[in-house]
Length: 592
Image 1 (tube, rainbow, N blue to C red):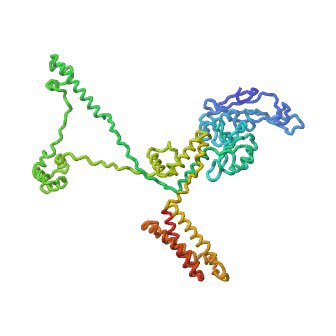
Image 2: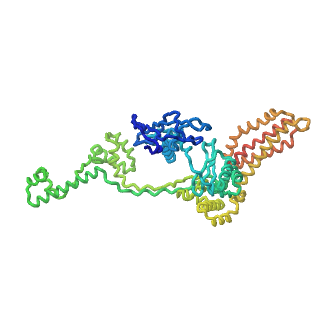
Image 3: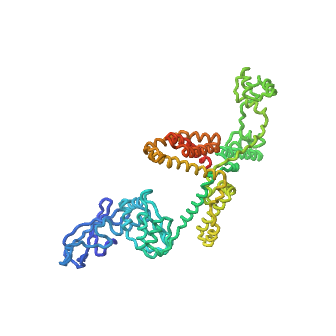
C-alpha cells in the first residue's frame, strides 16, 4: 500500500517507463459518501484516470495512475447528481501532486527559497518551476498568529520609489508576523481591529502610522523605536555641524619601517650547502683512512674515486672550499686604462671628480674602453660618502568632520581619532554636543532608564549656541543674505506692478506683462554676464571689496526709484545697480 493514499487503496501494477516509476492504483472501497448530502452510494456512474506526482524514489520520479470512480447520488433531493470519490488531504481534488509532495516542496521553499529550491527539487526528482514553488509557499496553510503584546510597525520598499508596504514584527520574539500593502493609516487600523490585544506599538515618526494606531488600538501605548531615536539624535548633531568647517587636515605620522626579516635560503643556496657538507665529509673520510694506514689504491677503490683525487685530498691540510671564479682584471689594472692613469690622477688632484667629464677627455686622447670600466676604477677614489640627511616628510590627510562626528568611536582608525580629538579641542560647543550624542547612543544600547534621566537633565541646554553669531564671518554672511533677499524682493515684486499699473493712477506706466518682463530682461542678462567678474574680484581682491561695492550698488538701486520714477527710462536705469547682487552672492559663498 502507498503511504500517501488511504489503506483502502491497492497498487495493481508497477511500471518503469524510462526514468519514471509509474504506479497503477485504485480504491477498494465499495461505497463513497456524497460531499453535498453525505448519503453513501454504491452506484458507479463513470471512471477516469488521474496522474498526480508523488515523492521520488531514490532519485527516480514517481507518478501515480489512479483509477477514480464517479458515483451517482441516490438522494433525490440532493443538488448533485454525480460526484467523484474524495481522497482527503492526501490527494486533494484537481491536484497535480500528492499532499506529501506538496509538503516537501513547501518546506524546501521555506528553507532555501524559490530558485535554489527548484534546482534542488529537480535534483531530487521533482520537476517544478521557482514561481510555482513560491505559489505553493504562499498558499500553504499557516496557523493563526497570536496577537503580540509589543508590535513593531515600519515601512519597507518592494520596488524603490514605486511600491511600498508595511511590515509588522513581534518585538518580543523578533519575528515578522504580517505584511500590509501600502503605508496608509487605514490598513494598519484595520489590522489592529482584527487583532485586538496589542498593548505597545513601536513605530517611527510617520503621521500615518500614528493615526492608524490611534484608530485601530486607542488604548495601546505608542513609543518610538530605538533606531529612529538614535537617528534623530544624529540628525541634531548633523544640523549642529552645518555652520562649521567641513574638512580638517591633520599630520599623519609615517608607519615605522618594517623590520628586516631573515629570508629563508633559496634552493640554490641549499644545494650549495649540501654539496659543501658532502665535500667536507669526503675529505674527513679520506684523512681518517690515510691516518689508519690504508693505501691510495685501496682508498680510491673503496670510496669510488680516482687516485689523483685521493692524493689531492690527502695533500690538502684544511677542508676544501668552493671554487672561486676570479673576475676579469678591472679598474686601473686594466690594460685599456694604463696609458691614462697619470692623466686621471692629475685631473683628480685638480678637483675634477666628474667621471663623465673625465671619460670625454680620455676618449679625445684615444681611449677605446667603456664608461663603466672607468667608473669602476675611479669609484674607490671617492671614499665613503656621508649618509644623506634623512628628511621624512610628514603626510597630511583630510578628513570629513561630519564623518568623524557621526561615526561610532570604536569604528574610527587611530589617525581619525586623532583628528576628531583635535576638532573637539578647538570647539567647546561641538564637544558638548558630541558627548551628548555618544551618551545617548550608550543609553539606548544598554536600555538604562536611570542614565536616560540623567541625560535628559544634562541636555536641557540648546545644542546650537547663539554666541556663534558674534563671529565675524557668521554675522556678515547673514547680513549679506538679508540684503540680497531685500534686493531680489525689490526687483521682482515691486518694479513689475509699478510698470503694469495704468498711467491714470499718476505713477504707473500701463505696460503689459510681456513688456514688463522685457524691461527686466537686461538685469538677468547682465547678472549672467558679470557673474564671473565678481568671482575674479573675490579671488584677486578678496571678499571685502566686492561686498562693499555690491552694498553701494544695492543701496543706490533702492534710492533711485524713490527719487526719480516719473519716466520709464528712469526705472530702467535704476535697475542696473542691482547688478551688485552678483557680488553679494560671491561674497556669501566665500564666507561660507
